[in-house]
Amino acid sequence: MDAVKSRLTGFTQDNSTMSMLIKAVLAVAFCMVLIKAMKRMVKGYKDYKNSAPWILKGTKNAQKRMIILQDPSKEGAKTLGRSKNEEGGLEFSYVMWMYVEDWSYKYGQWKHIMHKGNESSWPLRAPGMWLHPKKNSLRVYMNTFKDVGEFVDVDNIPLRKWFNVFVCVKQKSLDIYINGNLIKKKELSGLPRQNYGDIYVNAFRGFSGYLSNMRYYDYYLSYSEMRKHLSRGPSSMPCVDSNESPPYLTANWWTN
Image (cartoon, rainbow, N blue to C red; front, side, top):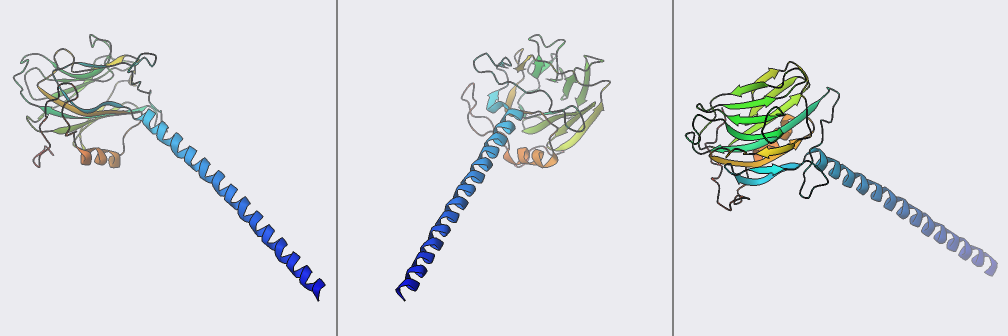
C-alpha cells in the first residue's frame, strides 16, 4: 500500500513539475511574441513619423519668414523624404491651414506662402505656393522634368476665415483640395521634379494672416486621412513666432 502511495505521489509531483515547465515555456513564448509585436509597433510609428514630418506644428504669423533646413547634418533640420513611389508611382502630399487677414497687404505683388527649393524661389519650386497680387486666388507651382513653370490657380480664396489646403501629387496629376473638396486637378506635362532644397515659409514678407499645422506626407493622402486633418482644425495655441493669439476656427468656415 505504501509503495502504491509513493508511486502516486511521485506521479503527481512529476505532473506538477511538467505543468510548471509547460507554463514557463508558454510564458516565455508569449513574452517573445509580445516583444516582437512591440518592436514592430515602434518601427511602424518611426516609419510613419519619417514619412509624415511636421513642417509647422502650431500657428505662425504669415508675415514672418521661416526656413526648414533639409540637410540632416544641420541642427534643427526636418528632412522630408522623397516620394514613397507606391504602386501607382510617384506620390506625395502637403497639408496646411491658412487665414488671410488683409488682401490689400502688398497689393500688386505676389504673396509668398511656401516653396521647396532655392532661396530666390526660382527656378526650384516643387512645390511653390503664392497668393495672387490683385485677386483672391491661390497659385500652386510644380517643377516637372519637362517644364519648370507649371502651375494651377484656385480662385475665390476667402478672407478672414480659416480654410484647409491639400496639395496632392500622384504621377503627373496635381490635385488641389480645399477643405476636403477636390477643387482643381491638373495633368502635368511630365513627372514632378523633386529637389533637395530647403523649405521656405512666408519669404519676401509673406502675406497678411496666419499659417497653421503644415505637414508633409511621402504618399497621396486618402480621403479618411484628409477628414482627420479637417476634424482637428488649425492650432488654437498662441503663434510660435510672435506669441500672439490667432483667430479661432468658427462655425462659418469656408466649405464651398
